[in-house]
Image 1 (tube, helix red, strand yellow):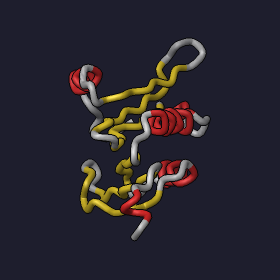
Image 2: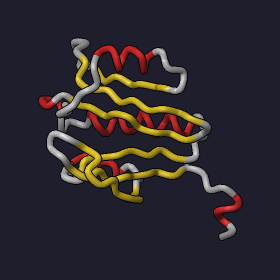
Image 3: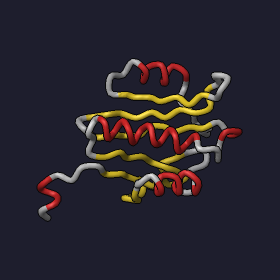
Amino acid sequence: CFSEPWSEQSLAVELDNDTAHFFVAKSSDGTVVGYAGMHDVFGEGYIANIAVSAPWRGRGVGRLLVGSLVGYAQEKKLDFLTLEVRASNEAAISLYRTEGFELVGKRKDFYRNPQEDALLMTRRFLVRESESEI
């Protein structure tokens, strides 16, 4: 799914990381068709990956995975979820917007192969009292 995917070893390390949480989407025959991973650090959620196998894109798998991350964040009462997405990935950006994520910034030349900016998108869940008084 990615021009520079995580190695199997990197994924294995993440599965043993207490702050990492992964969700897997499978087809009816048990084939893995997508996954999503995030880190829950001091009440904040950082999405690391959302990947859907090409033949399964446009069939609601990405929405299901994002919904799983959002549901986890709400259950754990995280303040927010945030992620980076390639600036050219219009389908993902549209999905994230419909799931309540807002554009909050840009990371210049964040991606390689090809080199490209990342858009930083965040969905907030809790407003701290000090923020609401501003």
